[in-house]
Amino acid sequence: MEDGLSLKVKLRRAERMRQWRAFGLIAPMLLFLVVIFVVPIADMLRRSVHDVDLSEVWPLTTQAIRTWTDHSQAPDEAVFAALAQDMKKAKANRTLATAARRLNYDFAGSRSLIFGTARALPDDAPSWKTTILETNNTWASPEIWAAIDRASGPTTAFFLLQALDLERDPMGNLRAAPENEAIYLNVLSRTFGISLTVTVLCLLLGFPVAYLLATLPPSKANPLMILVLLPFWTSLLVRTAAWVVLLQDQGLVNGALQWMGIIEAPIRLIFNRAGVLIAMTHVLLPFMILPLYSVMKGIPPVYMRAARSLGAPPTVAFLRVYLPQTLPGIAAGTLLTFIIALGYYITPALIGGAADQMVSYFIAFYTSDTVNWGMASALGAVLLTATLILYTIYNRLIGTDQVKLG
Image (cartoon, rainbow, N blue to C red; front, top):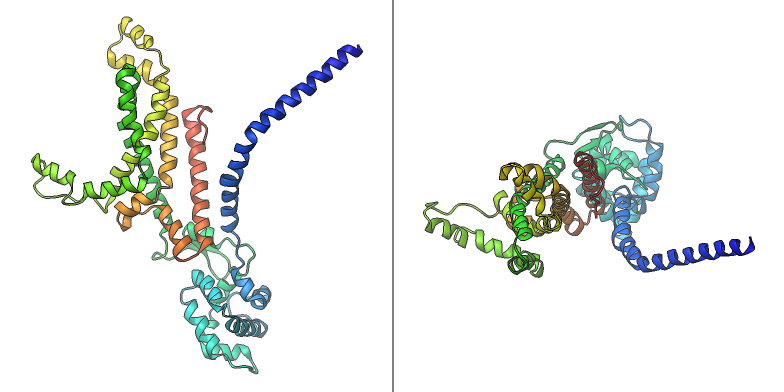
């Protein structure tokens, strides 16, 4: 019994050591994924609801605004007095632009309002409310105070709501954003529409190529595979710039079409949706071909020969025997291509027009041009959430758990 128990203990220890060694092998990759993938996504989600810009510059005002209960009118004297003190201090510290920039996201004209009021404030006043209202009567509007209240932090739903073309009125009720500001749902639908169209085009073009590569002998398939992989060895920026040269009015594509007599005058193929679809399809085509090829290569040719020997016409044999076996490759290729297409930025920015820019363009704009990290993160969070929802629906529809989002 003692020997048997000792053997069990040794086996358990050996198994634990084996598991620790296996974990040690994958630990660097796991750490890499956490640092490069998980942490940035978590920080993006945090920034989409984190809002402390105004509270750091106007601490007294953001604290006093919490006592504002009647949102149908401007707050009382105490809030105006806190605003005056914060404005004077921010002006002296040269941080007034931070408050103006944050409020301008929510209330148009806040920058001129704040700077104009700060310049006109006296050193002292018997009633700060009266003084500030005399400086600019806009401070009597509940809208500006509701914007201050929403920006008081430390968390806010403002950016997420704006990314969905929603906003809150002074009473806190949700309402649709004004028509001239409601652009993001249209941008999201455009992004998913372009990505879906590119995915379908890649499938239609990539399926025959993958089938050809899988059925040809290696001596002929290998050179063709090199041509498929060749785009991976070329910079994305170079490939996109090449399409600018090819698709312009005096480019090779228009020249060839005119030479063949298909068109009489150059057609517009750049700075529009057609150019974006052509360039993105070319760039993403290998991501469709490779998953299809890997699955097709594993399908034994004997299945098609057996179907033909049993009397099935070639078309019927292909549709009922061969095509169902390629569904895992189709699922993997379409999912990979679609998700990569969602985040494309360079190709639409260089080849598309103003009506062809995707969500990535606006994320880059808010990140680098306006330094509005909250809005950029909110758009990224909405795009991530929509992608995960569509992936879940897609995974249920194809009826397989083998396709993993990688």
